[in-house]
Image 1 (tube, chains in turn purple, blue):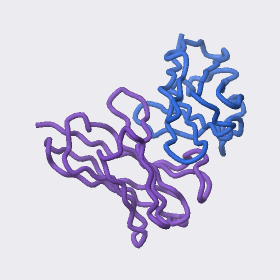
Image 2 (image 1 turned 60 degrees about the vertical axis):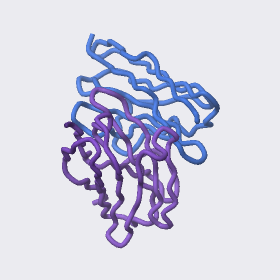
Image 3 (image 1 turned 135 degrees about the vertical axis):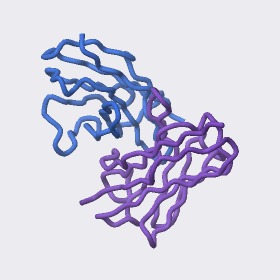
Length: 121
Length: 108
């Protein structure tokens, strides 16, 4: 079964660092892009960035460039989203998602279950 | 960056009626447009890609149309399980590939 399994919920304080994960299984991890999507409480979906684990090519939305870092470790088929200094406004559900075609971007048909990040003092 | 605009923000429809949702791109995205459904507490689900191709397992009452900058998602006869939020997303060319702001389909 093709699936993405994300790490568990996190509660952090402002200024702390964080790295959440998304483990892919059941498919060729290095052949598909993996994207990260933010959903703030009660709000819509925001495309943050995407990585191709095969060569670590990474693209960011201008809104998130410099605010987060996306990476991947193909040896353990896992993608990551990390922050060096969290803010209260980073409180959100974060999803990883995989497009339906290898090497392309055609619609995300596989989604992780989401990781809730809460940042509060 | 291409901006995706969905309308209306909320659509009130009675069960069994037709729902028509719109999505507009700020510049042409050809047919590189996907639609998603999201229910509370769940991850989004892919409904349509290529503007008009239903994803695996999606009922025929869901249909997509359009190309260029104007797109439509039609739900021909709303079932109780269809009340949800719907998002469009363009994936033309290289990233970023933004989503629209969403349309909430609620029971009238």
